[in-house]
Length: 309
Length: 243
Image 1 (tube, chains in turn orange, cyan):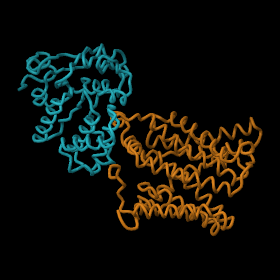
Image 2 (tube, chains in turn yellow, purple):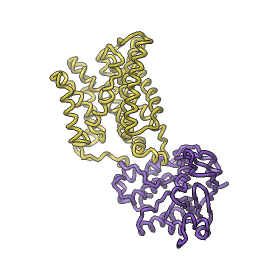
Image 3 (cartoon, chains in turn purple, yellow):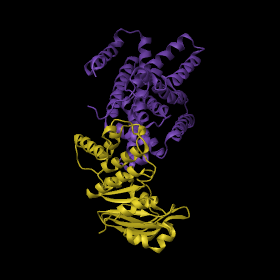
Image 4 (tube, chains in turn green, brown):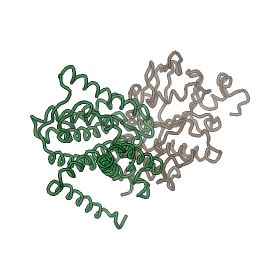
């Protein structure tokens, strides 16, 4: 590969984008910073969703659960711990719950996996709602401790880490093993792959990033309740964004999250009444006419291979 | 100590016994054929050995150690590989990647990444798939897919290879090619336990044949003995058998 796609140019582009992002709080208006923060949040959720769901093809609809757990971690710990520790706790809580969910839906794949994870995340939402109402005696909680600049930097770091993790896993033998599991669990198992451990481990890794994103994002919400923290829409958005961007390429989910978040912010401010309608139309068009997403439209299409170095 | 041993193995599905009180011993080396009418329990027996299924009662020993109850990936790492009656490949990755996965995750040998790649190339050559190495497995025809599955099984470096109707569906020239490959695999010291319905193939390749009917062993011996066995002729081969 030569020309505009050479590794040096790619690296230069990544460094440049990072530098622009890292200095953003110094010169950009507050609302731009706010928008970029939520873009970074969706980038994290989408990219971490594709870590497990991309190669296996199992559609998880439990993203809201891990994100919400991160948010509640921040609400509970935000006043007593420094921000980075809060974010890490959110991630670890997401990881632990990811292991649990992974264990529960071990026997499920395909359609059943999607329905089950969605049901489970609704169960969690209602359980927290019940708990807050009957045990804590509150409806929502205030989140204290961080500024929007801090949330921005946290999410910049988390998004970058999730992209790096997704990139490395995709190129490793683990990424290939996950693909094999998605194709045939039985054959993968008979080829010596420990399907149970792989399914749980990589599902939990993606939950880790989702939990961190929730904990970092909590500051932006200031006030949370179970319905906003565990909003089911959060479970669907990463699926739509990665389909829109195309999961065959590393940059697909990033691009999808970036563009769709941007479009929805613009639509929301310009056409508040037609927002969901226009958003829906865009999506129908994408599914019908570009099933492999933006990346499929831009690139030659065939995914990179593991063995060509 | 037998290489592979079944001790009073029974597998029930609900009330139905697919394998009933079956004991067998297999020594290392050679080709053992497993035949019997449809529903006799041949594939069930392979599933029990490879760990897809666990015996209801009884146990299976490999090299003197109990393997029944272990998960398939653990049994694979102990040196038992298999192919499936209906081919189960990883369709959306390339042929060479299918084989590489077997090499990396099979019996642990402490190889480097380069060694795994070399091993993969050797297997591709051995089975005449070198030209297809970068093709997605799903784009191959069914015969090629069967060979990729065989290559993936061999890549795990098995001591015992279970073949479930590898020959079925192959034309005469493909059949003779497959038979040559099976003989070469035997020469490498790999013990082969194969289920097949093509009698000519089983009788000419096998050193020993086991016959199952209704989950029970009804005969066990050399191909010549089996083809003269009254019980086998009545239940499976038929009177006009030319074997």
